[in-house]
Image (cartoon, rainbow, N blue to C red; front, top):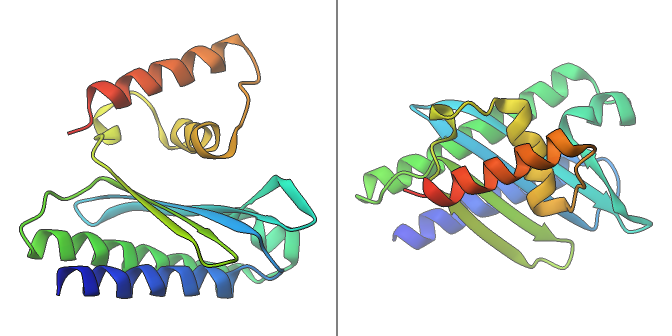
Length: 163
């Protein structure tokens, strides 16, 4: 039952993201950070003709002329699905995760990762964590020595605080 509930939420999140991306996409990387039913969600995606360029979900309204109201509604739905996903863990006496990452290809391949690093207890803010997500999953290169050090510190923090 637990896995069926999880799979249903995974499918709903993937479908919602698919419906939100207004162009043909190749792969998307979704991230949710939830703590006490608060947090945020985001995703990056690329297109078949530009596989090395990722578009940030929060840029969809500007890049594709999608209404902010429509995008905000989708954002809220993705957030609530993520809270529901975490609730399934709690309901089934599983340790609640702090972050949830889902990678989906246009062929339907799915990778799931649950993170237990309590980033909210760190000195790394939301923008730092978005940059780190890009570094970790999308191959973002540090723009300078300070950013390189920050990514190394975040990697070390993540390794030391996995649970």
